[in-house]
Length: 219
Image 1 (cartoon, helix red, strand yellow):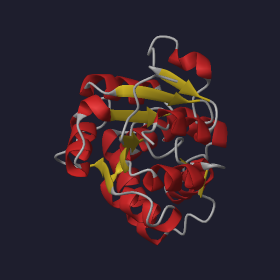
Image 2 (cartoon, one colour):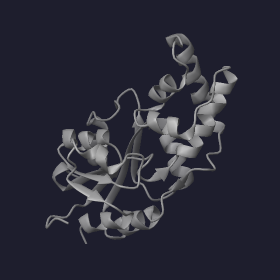
Image 3 (cartoon, one colour):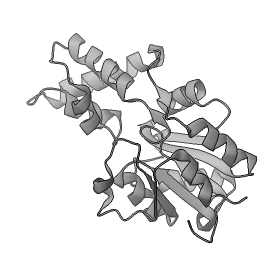
Image 4 (tube, rainbow, N blue to C red):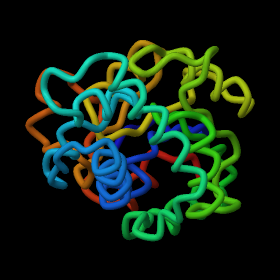
């Protein structure tokens, strides 16, 4: 761990703080069934996640599906999500303790996700209540990562500065977003991407357990 320590921590959501894969699979397959299309396995859904719901649905629909039908599927997914219970989604082991410890040390905690913004707010309220100070998902004024806009806006709203901030994620796109924002980057080993996927992204740090993030925090 570095001699320098940080006071502002911004996290990716799916695959970093929350294991959402089972619910993403159930909900996506419900839409595919309604549309009369074949369902996808959880491993297939895993290979589609990371770039937002639209990208997920466009990959999940059968080959040769028209853009209009893919967009209808995307619209149906968005309609269903607010009423879907997400009962299978849980924080990864050690996440809530890590977030509480960061806050006890006076660190500021935020989230930037490629999930649509309303979905981000809903699932954080359900699974991480009171643990996140600022959260943003994809919105008209916040493009998907690796664009750094969301990371920089979140740091600013938290009252932090890039020089004292880190971005923590489970994908190469997250590492690119952090680097584009000029902040330290942390890749987690427990998420949706194997360690070898980070070979070209060159994160500043790799952590094997949520508790390892605390080694970067100001005390």
